Length: 283
Image (tube, rainbow, N blue to C red; front, side, top):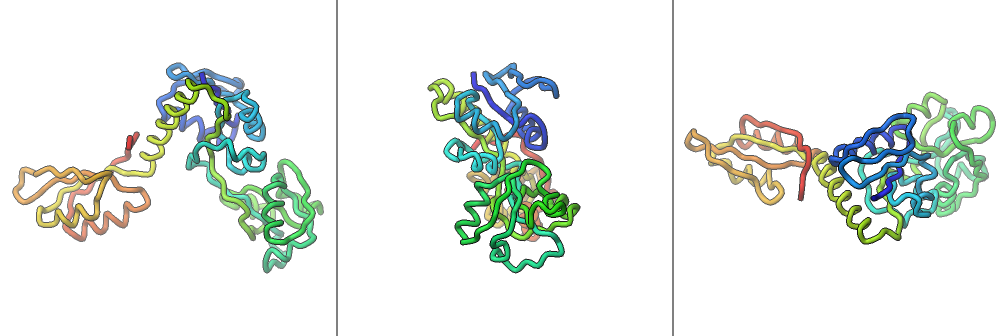
C-alpha cells in the first residue's frame, strides 16, 4: 500500500481530493478524520499540515505527497518532486504599502521584510545583490506593514485581493508555484510500480482537462484545409456523410487553441461544429 499525504484543509486539499477521485479511486473523507483508505486501489490518504508534508515524505512516514512547490522548495525538498500537477497555481510576491514609492528592488535595500518563506526570498534577494532584514512569521503576513513590523512583505498571491484589502500592492514576483506530486526516494519495487500506475491515471486526467473533443461536418473540397487545422493525436477521423460531397470529421484540440481553430474551421466551410469535454485521455 502507498501512503499519500495531502493538506488537511483549504483549496489545495480540495483540488487534491478531486484529482484522486477523477483517477477512479474511491474513498470516504470527513473533516474530523486524519486518514482514510481507498476501497479500490492500495492507497491510504493522510491529512496533514502542508508544511509537514515534505518532512513526512523525506523521512518515509508517507510514501507520497501532494504539496505546493513553494512549500517544497522552502523545506529544501526539491529532489522529492516527481511531477507537476497543473493546479493550485499561485505566486510568491513582494508587496509594499500602496503609498510607498517603489522604482525597483534597490528600494528594498536594508528594509524590513516580513515573510513565511525566508529561504526562497533570501535566495532571490541575494542573487540580485539586495540586503534586507527578513522577519519570519507564519500567517497574517499582510498585516505586518500596518502594525510597524515591516516595511514590505513577501507572501503567496493568487488573485491579489488580499493585498489590496490590506493596503498593499504587488511589485515583484519571487517564485511561481503549483501543486506537485512528491515521493520518498526508497520506495520498494512494488510501491514504485503502484506510483507509476497512479501517475498514469493522473496524466490521463490532466491531458483530458487540457483538451476538447470536436466534431464537425465539412465539404470534401475543404477536407485538406480541415485536416491542416485539426491534426488530432495522429490525424482526424473522417467519415463520409449520407449527403454526397460531405464528410464528418472528429478530432481533439487543445483548450488554449480552441477558439482560434474554430474560427478558422468556419472560414474554410465547416458546419455543425460540436465541442465535448473529455473525461480521460490516454496517449
